Image 1 (cartoon, rainbow, N blue to C red):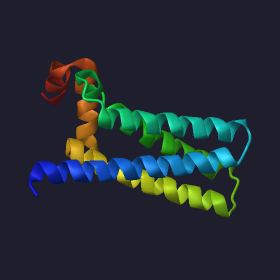
Image 2 (image 1 turned 120 degrees about the vertical axis):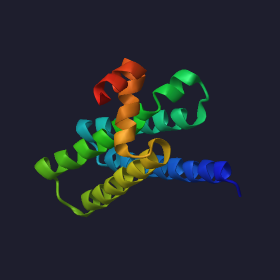
Image 3 (image 1 turned 30 degrees about the vertical axis):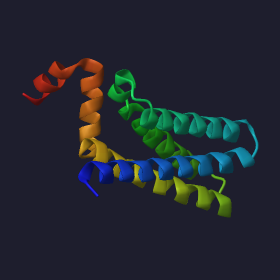
Image 4 (image 1 turned 180 degrees about the horizontal axis):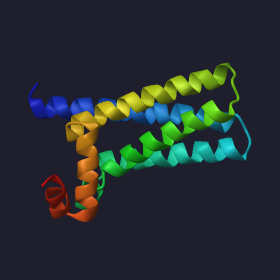
Length: 141
């Protein structure tokens, strides 16, 4: 198996795992009831859809901003974990959801290493896609 095929296969496996974990935590939050949990579930569902679009759509504009759903999902997941740590509730299903979310962040970091070389490389790509290539070159100088 050549390198390109391995990269595509590992990318597909990572994307499926990321979307699967995102869907799982979205379902858990949805099943809890209440507006806050419903909104959290909808946020996860929207970000999962954005990850899928970024993985499947060959359009250059989507490729340019493919960092956005990854970074957004990392931040959203971290905010959910922090919010739970501050407000609770602390019961067994919450610990299952937080375990899934920590695993999700780990997979997103692995995916950013696969695509951008590192999480810092993803942030550099984000700045380059928003501000243009010269902004990153002048910042490095």
